[in-house]
Length: 182
Image 1 (tube, rainbow, N blue to C red):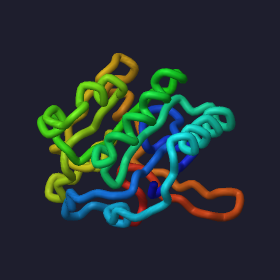
Image 2: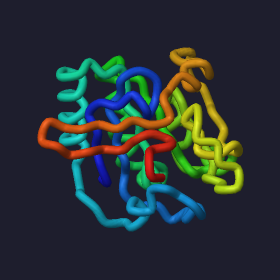
Image 3: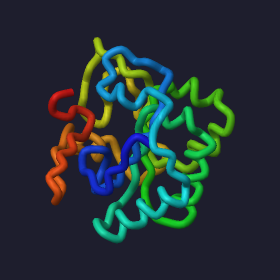
Image 4: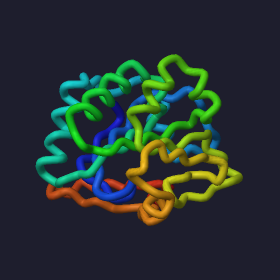
């Protein structure tokens, strides 16, 4: 795991917990989160992640989770295990951002199982020349897949491009599709 944010408004519709996984071999030029590329980071088991998500729900009343990276689909077994529990034991929505295209995902093992657990998938490699940074799409080539009727394109367009969060102990978190300084 690279990072976990218990409450965010700039990473999907409504108030959401955000999980950034560690590890990505896609190497999109211009990626603004290159610290997530190395396959090293805090190892967190599914039970611990579920505890963090449950605590975020209890403390902040989150309506969903967003999973980003790094590259979530390069950790499909763990991702599927997490999504299984979230989908079957809660009413939280699930949004995943991936650099893989829809066509690449369709060829992956367990792709149908993965897609059946998501409300929204945003797919495609970041293309620096097509930078967009709005509606949760970093570049114009990225595609949005509304896999349930829970959200609309209007809901995604209403998500702020960035947020600055200052914790009670003074830590500053810059987050969103277009965080300051990216």
